Length: 229
Image (cartoon, rainbow, N blue to C red):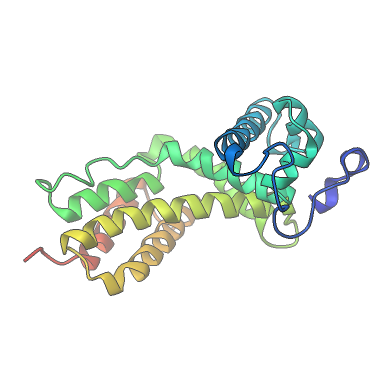
């Protein structure tokens, strides 16, 4: 990050600005594509281990490369900026928590399936309201006067992963004819922004409880969908 480079930059040459290098320095051309992809996975797993041990602030060029047993130049090939690595790790952190549930089960009404999926964007019940606190703290770190590059990268990664999963659910229903293709992007934006607003409402008390939040989100889903002919 711009504000936390320090000794790591002196030791590794810092993060390369711009696109990836012409070739993975440990790759060896087209024949090494598979092993090169494996190295990317190796780097991500090393970064995830560091996050689990000491938080995202521990993700640096030196630490990740050392944990992965690879050179800093290989890391910079796959992740030209530190923020790129943090975004990738944040995306992977979100994915396991958003299940497809019954979205592919056409025996279940489309509105039920989509509502069941997007409900995962909110706490399951009032006992889980505390799970919104880290999200609120992340917003503080990502926007406003206290924003940091790390906070912005974490928010970016989480938002990207969540939006892609919601888009996949919506596209599934588009393919079935439950939603017009031309409205898919708007539907994704509407669901994401509604979920964010409800989360803020739960934190501030303007939304009285989680059951109310889920009911509002369910009503939005029903308004977006039309019965399959």
